Length: 287
Image 1 (cartoon, rainbow, N blue to C red):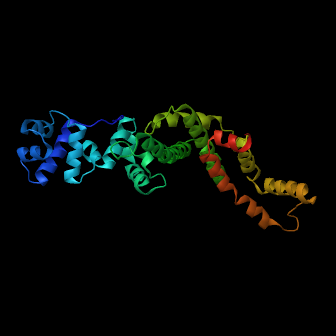
Image 2: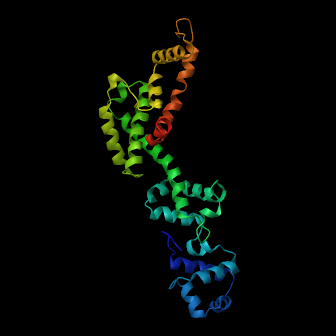
Image 3: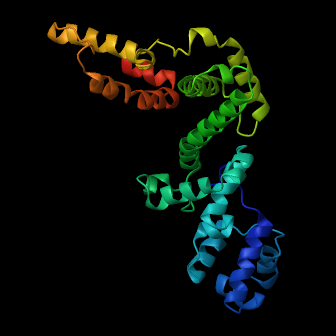
């Protein structure tokens, strides 16, 4: 009936006691309602034994409390307990909003349906895991991005880079680390030393004189590089123009607005490059 999160018989007893006292019932009176003798109901309340499913169902009926509440407390407590048990305690403590996000997803999100409820009406563990992975992905990317920028700013290469190259370097290095994390699962939230080490290795590979170049295995990286300067962008537009209209493009007599429009796509392309795993690009461009 239960998964990774197991009921704590002492806490279950405390919740039964809360109902007993709220309804102003003695052990004997509560036992009579449940068809149990006083010593039996007392053992449940004191946490000496876990009340069986039938008793919990009866308690739910007479109190109006959900069955899941007796076993696990509030839904958010249950979600938090599951995430702690699966090794995400540090991340959840740093970002407590992730529990609320999963709770809202369960009650008001697109996924709310009976198929995501477990036997006691609480979110199935698979649902919690799927939601957590989605929210944690964004948190981890921001985490790596912040560390990358912090380490880069302290490096000797930082001063040699232009403002645009600094932004490029942060995106490029953090993307490589995030891709590695997605594949290996080797770095967890809070393991800053590991991220710092990887950033430092990547910085040592930077060739400032050659500029910052994104990997061109897929079109997104190629476009980012082509739009890096006005000269490269002008050449790119001219190539497109010759392909589609058989006409050459040049800014000799104007046309700078078109250059600006094309280059305005670059920040969005860089975000796409940073946020999209290589296997997704594979689906887009190779499948």
